[in-house]
Image (cartoon, rainbow, N blue to C red; front, side, top):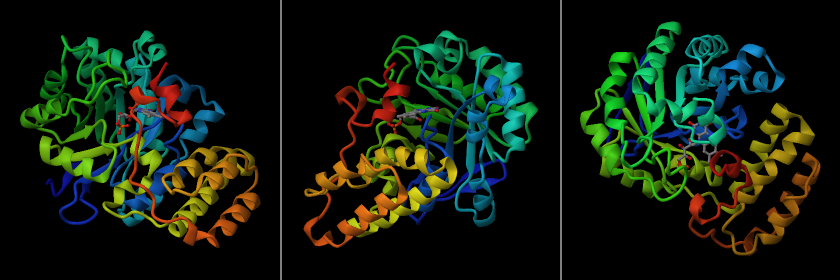
Length: 356
Ligand SMILES: Cc1cc2nc3c(=O)[nH]c(=O)nc-3n(C[C@H](O)[C@H](O)[C@H](O)COP(=O)(O)O)c2cc1C
């Protein structure tokens, strides 16, 4: 098990000796500062910001301004608990450089370039995973972004365009010379989108040949999966997306919070979310998290049912406090089940990014 990863001035270490180094993957619509902070507190040693379009950064729209709120990075700087990796995407390399410079000014500690998004709209615009069709173009982007910012640059990509065009080994071979400090690999092809299973054997092959740290990603649904990925592939770090949405405590190792502890976590997350988005939107956005915070308890369906209709913090607290009194009825949560996208995800928020 890797004991440390060096990324420029940062050293990532496991939360506890013997654990793999776990990090939060970038997730559009999810990776805002409250969620990042929740995951960092749980043990995510690097946290990904949702991907941000370079043109949107340069046009200064308010939605992008919100995404560029990296206030949690100050906490990571002070405590060393995590590092913030902001992710840029686009099709015009010059603009990607300019966008990356703005993200650095706003406090990003690491610059991640998205070469993995397989959403048709993104591919059509020659952004995201479209770069996998032309590795020279990809490396040009890495080189120019690296030269344009003073923070370390990492790239996140997939195995290749399809089974006949597996370019990941070429990507890792060239990454260091282009200036990249690490490569994160979602072990699916672009053609696969989110279907089928992630083929971790390619992460192992990439690890064997790479001279920069490799983050393995794809189908880590539980902490034991993360341990298995680290052992089977030798990857330096394990990057987790969907499982973090369902159970952010996956980063802590084997800790499974009790019902009462989950109430505390949900209230903390809610408080941050309403600070970030205001009460109305913040409470609405928390509904999906409430559903997953209280998933798995045999008797909690009524609780989840009432939390999907809440509109104010007061209502949420009222419901949670009432249920806290009934904690003894809850029993133990069943082990986590995260559906693959193949098998109908129950998280509405995942659909936008993965199923179009
Ligand atoms: C809701 C959602 C949003 C995502 N947004 C991004 C993104 O902005 N940038 C990116 O590189 N990958 C994004 N991904 C892909 C994940 O980072 C990750 O590569 C993928 O989900 C596989 O990891 P997992 O099996 O742990 O979920 C997203 C995935 C989901 C489910």
